Length: 372
Ligand SMILES: N[C@@H](CCC(=O)N[C@@H](CS)C(=O)NCC(=O)O)C(=O)O
Image (cartoon, rainbow, N blue to C red; front, side, top):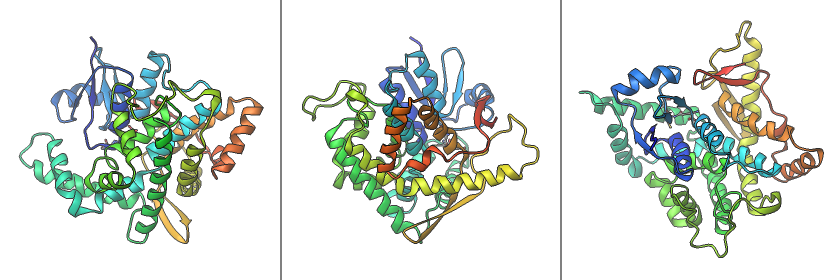
């Protein structure tokens, strides 16, 4: 049987998205770290030269770097079984994919890096275990940890924003917990693309590092159960009476999910607006940005305000690469569905997300995100 190699790690945020997909889609895989000679010689050149988790290699030697691209590849092959068929659910699924992969980096980094007493030994173990064998491996692992601590600040976590970051996260957790108490997955009885996006921050960081895990263990049992469920081959719905079999009927978006979106909107919307301004300003300043140029991970900083707290965070083009996929779903809707979706987004304080766009689109070439 064909076995996919998943290059990733248990503590890697983005690996969780691809891993859970492979599990739920029944695709046999084995997980390895990036340290092998085979990875450097055979895989990395085909991954656009960008080292990153997750990357997969098929039995035929096809290489895909990036979690969204990995899921796209298998969705196309297996009949899009995790993509809802109805318009509002398709849009909401893509929206959760965007927010999950890009919108919860602040709490994910805060609860990993700012609780050394609870987390440091655990993180030291994982960073060292996943380092390639080399004599100075311990020092390299420490340097990698320090770099990630710096990344937490780049995403907008600092002493002035800590209280806000925690409040926003706890609100999201409470609403998610209410939702998962009623439904096994975001859109009913099976995971959608949006569930895989959301599991990225919720597995490796927020659902596994000791400090944030203790929060879920003490106050969000249903969120914890969803995290477990996402890593199991079966639907794992024993605690629900008569759970839905697939996505909810009638293109339904449950009220409990609207409450989750409201909580997520508080920083996702202003940050998206500010990041678009920063990136569009940068694009405007480029005299010769040729089509095919790599879209870098961050392009300057975006500043926005929530409850009188100023947050400054890296403006990441990738957020807009994912958001555009949700916006494309909206564009394909009938007028009636568009109006219903706008009304729903109004209730979530997310209507602006339909119109916030970059002035240049992002595509993929040679496993890298590029400006079109
Ligand atoms: N857009 C990528 C992001 C992947 C990513 O940033 N992965 C992290 C680990 S969670 C990584 O590999 N960092 C190391 C690096 O970028 O060199 C995806 O969604 O797969």
